[in-house]
Amino acid sequence: MRVLYFDAFAGVSGDMTVGALLALGVELEQLRSELAKLPVSGYRLRAAATSVHGIAATKFDVDLDDPPCGQPAGPPAGHVGSPVPQPHQHHDESVGDGPAHRYGEGESPGPTAHHHLHQPDHQHTHQPAEHGHRHYRDIRAMLEASGLAAGAKRRALAIFARLAEAEGKVHGMVVDEVTFHEVGAIDSIVDIAAAAIAMDLLGVEHVYTSTLPLGSGLVRAQHGVIPVPGPATIELLRGFPVRAGDGSGELITPTGAAILAALATPGEPVPPLRVEAIGYGAGTRRQPDRPNLLRLMLGRVAPATQGDELVEIAASIDDANPELYAYALEAVLAAGARDAWLVAAQMKKQRPGVVLHALAEPAARELVVSAILRETTAIGLRFHAVQRVVLPRQQIAVETPYGAVQVKLAHAPDGTLNVAPEYEDCRRVARQRGVALKLVYQAAIAAALR
Image (cartoon, rainbow, N blue to C red):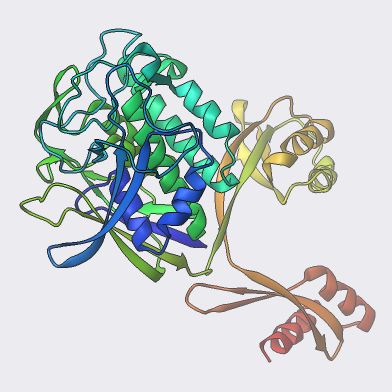
């Protein structure tokens, strides 16, 4: 499995994420080509090599049109990358852009509030017209209808969904009514879509993250002074390991937090990795106590274990004829359960009983439930999702002095080999040859080890 590890010692932002992904080998022209599939105009992409504390990194920027008041922004829809007059520089809210920076976690004046993301350090002298705002629902529809590759589209939709959910909760708004200022909408879309596209191009299957530094202090946002991290940012980081008060200023931006919230699992331990590539994305401000960089590591998890998600179904039974149990287990397995078993239990009124358990794929749940209710006296049951880890396994046929037997081999992470002869084969051979079952087992294990 190919994974991406965020080593966020100086924080995470959208532009730093894209810069680091470019440093991992994604071509800027590839991003331009893919982003052209979105009906978003009035911007151009820039990526430049830089050095921070002697470390080579990539600085990614989105330059936006700054048209005269009342004029449409930028070239026709779908146009990407043409030169535009009087651009202002995009800093992705940005990690380290300073206390005068504007971003969208300010207090909302009411349900018509707008979300202002990625405002630069200076303010526009004109006020945007009403058509200069985009609802989250419109951005979602645009992404769904786009020609982006399936993996990139899925990631971009998930990131924007988490961002809109957090903003809606902070401002007390319905998610579909969350709106983005036109400037913020453009570079939010570009940052998020570019990150999603780059991860898809790199074949990333899962994302892990280090403990996140939250920064400290106060910043002036659209509607007043707010604490760092902003309310939407900390909402997005629920469940993630963080270091409160680590660093000065804003280190985790809303876009950076949304990328992690959508693609990484909170608190998930990082497995041993085989690192294939390392990329650094640079922020804007120079920080006093650390290089303002995001380090991404691209690698693979050794296939020592595999995991999947199943459903465990359980029914407590205290009034059935025990003769029914064997047949019921057979019916449950025939209905699609991966495994089924009985556990003795003391029931209410001190009656002895059993709990019938079944493990099944989510798609087989209803069939397994029907089998349990049909073949037992249970009048109710319960189920919950479970995750499991299984060792990679293979099936081989071995020749023993008594006949051919199928054997299952599984490799543990430390290299230990587990050998398990198939019971049905061993029983058949033992009966055919008139020998003890244990002798067939021993011969099959010895043959497999040879």
